[in-house]
Every structure is written in C-alpha cells, then in structure tokens.
Length: 278
Image 1 (spheres, rainbow, N blue to C red):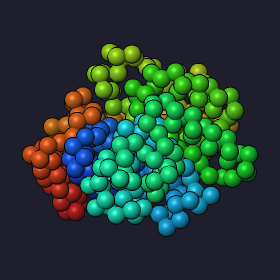
Image 2: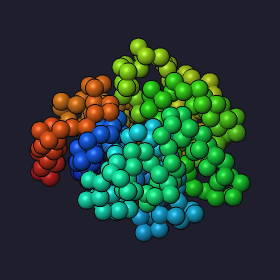
Image 3: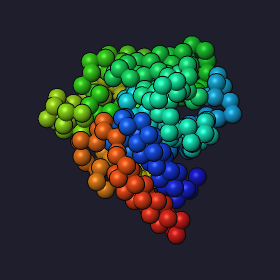
Image 4: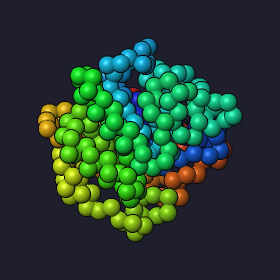
C-alpha cells in the first residue's frame, strides 16, 4: 500500500478517535492519536488479519497493552471493516461492545482484554510461546506506552521473552514522552529504553511513529530478526494531528467538548483534503 493511502487511512482513524471520545464524554484521545499511524500500518500493511474471518487460527495477533487507548484501536478496526464505523459513537455507553478498554469476548478483532498496564505484554508473550508449541508461524505484536514501562511486570515479560528467544514477538513502544501525571522522565524515568531492552536480549529498532517509510523499514527489520524478540521504539507526538492537542499532557484522558470536536474534525478534514490533492 502506498504511503499516501496509509496517510488517508490514518486521518480517518484520527477522526474516529475524536468522534468516539466526544460521544462518550470520556476516554483517552492523546495516546490514541499518537499511535494512530502505528495502528494503521499494523492493520493495513503489516499483519495477516481478515475482518471476514477474525478468529482465523493462523492470523497474526495484536495485544493493546496500553489498553486505555482503545479509541484508537476501535477506530482502526472499524475502518478495516471489523464493525461499522458509525458504532464508534457508542464508545463507553451502557450495553455497547466498545467499552473503555478492549474486551476480547465482545469486540470483533480484539485478541486480548487489556487495561491494567503491563499485563498485555505478558499475554502477548504467552501467545508467542503458544505459536511455537503449536508449530504455527503467526506473529504477535503488542503496543506499550512509555509510561507503562514503569510497571515491573513489563520487565518480567521482557526477561522471559528474551531468555526464550521469541523471535515471533514484536513489541512496539509509543514513546510520546507524556503520561497521565506529566513527562515520563519526570514521573519515574524509564530511560534509556533501548539499553534496558538490550539488556533483556531484545533486538532494538528506533523509528518515527509518524513516518510510514520509517515504520515500514522497522517492521521489515523485525521480521528478518531471528533468535531474539524485537522492540521498535517509536518516537511520537501525543495528540498528533490536532494542533491544540499535540504535546499537551492534559489530553491524556479528557474528551473533547462540542466546540473542540468541531475544531478537531475540521482540522483533520482539511488535512484529508490536502492529501487528496497530492
């Protein structure tokens, strides 16, 4: 898929994040927007998944370890065709299958229920082990926030994955530098992230979360890496795509009001129109 088409899809994904969090009057737009390009590349270029057969035993698996950014995942799944885009307006509503955190028993395309930070990584490790036991060649991907790296369970999972040389596992870190309480390097710094993962026998790749050429090269290198798991540390911008949300920690877990929703969607639609002119 050409970069221009991926950019257009990512723009639609970002619109879905704004629409859904506005409708819910709650949710986490900041980290959903920073990961929108990553979600887009995974589901439209990298992973072997099929909305018409979401339980295919040979499909690649994805675990959203930073489960609070479910609006970004849901929007991507909707654009991919797992469920209607209009259903995004039911986010967090009573009875909706689109709850505040992913639910594998209710939401088409969700491989693991997540939300408690650090635990999704461990689930992904288990899936990667299962692939080896079952002699399957599917790959397992998991997305973590940089603030999530402050969880001890992350490093237990990393130690296990590195020791067992799980080269079918690809960990992605959305390194936007901000978490709910402020800058990650001021709350409880996980830096240097690369050296920590190297110490746990991971192959480390650095990428630009908002550049599809960079993401393409990173995921290609991850696929070619044998004998050890891979982590792709993606430098990103929290709130990416919405000028008044970018790099603002306050947008970690606050939904846009009516005026902010219209401003954000207008900005995205103008960006989308500009892409159509290319």
